[in-house]
Length: 386
Image (cartoon, rainbow, N blue to C red):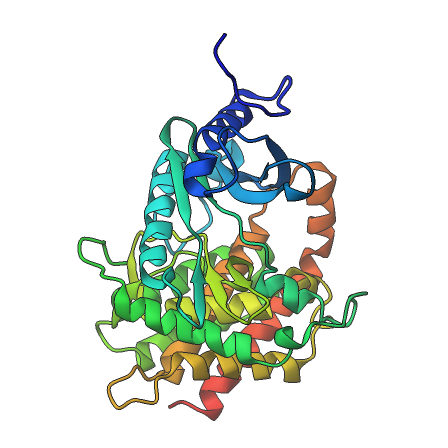
């Protein structure tokens, strides 16, 4: 009688069974010492609109622990595909199979850069790509994300105490340094360019402005898009300096380990984008956490947010003569553009189920927060145009 994977998978969906089978077959190769065909079990960690995440535990008794993270991508929902009225920075929605392949290639590239004992940065080790099921298997990272660390510090949190290595701004400064290093080392040959010119950026401002005004009305939408288009026309060069875009560089995609090292995941290297776009995206995501948006700025104090923002920018800047410098007006311009992109996504959220009704009820307050943030950015440009 042939052996079969030893795992608790009774009546498991086929995709889950295939994850267990592959990990069982290759666990000793990936993690020497666990033994041939060890006990493998799955735990569902999160279910997102576009993916399901599983922790894969390997071993028995006290030696059982999560060693693998399995990510199963899903296709776009009908609602997402039909919501084409919303303008986007990226012009098309990739099918799950293409996104999975690009993400696995991105994890592999980052691991080549930072996976050999870098003192400041770690890297998620990619293990396998199950192409038939749009599954990525990667080494499990037992650490909180920067978003989770930040969430523990907000005024409404019951877990406001943080370990010493999670305090201060060092992790945020390191997030800026990681991005600079990634941009310097990641070749972009063959990737198409997106928003490569001043006119492209102005066009996106106009598109977001028309969408928000149409959905919310001129008064609620404000004039940030119109002023942003004028700002882009005034401060941006005709052709923008480009770098490979991470795809979703944000605190939720950065692990902070106990020794202070950062590990970045969830890459989607599809485009060469304006060099300041990923920096802007990270800053916008840090400021516009969901709890901050839906409490209209009550969760986090402005002083703390400002300190973290400065730390990220300082980390990105290189003190050497030939290192990158941040053009603040260009940075604020792209921050404003990404803020409008996120605002448009919120307004265009599907209106189904009880959670959608709650979201719709809080949309007015959330829009107030987005409008306040656009005003903050415009004031920064006026006060420090350099």
